[in-house]
Length: 117
Image (cartoon, rainbow, N blue to C red; front, side):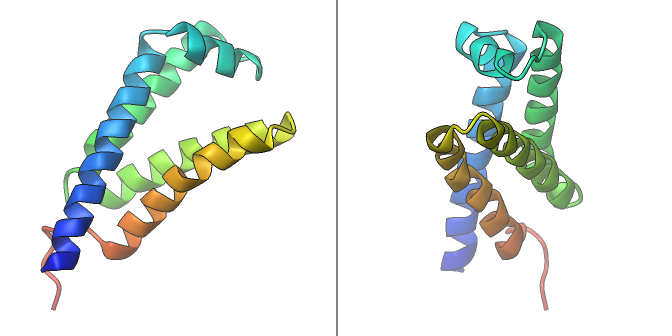
């Protein structure tokens, strides 16, 4: 029971962060445009990435789309890590690692509302 409560809190945190970062990308915040601009993303590309990030965060909330949402969010984070490493920005890549780990832990613990035997 305690594990499900902890997992629910982790899920809510991941959803909050996904919506927050996705919203910043969707609204083309200057810091997002600057970061993605290093990798030649256009403003439209950043906005599309923001929509995918927000969609993945929402999908995490529902048991039937939980895995898809986590995979989408983890893929987005992994893409950013890879792009940071291409620029030899180890600090930038390291900042993203806890968020990738969060998605992997959430997947491992499964959705708290699913019935397990």
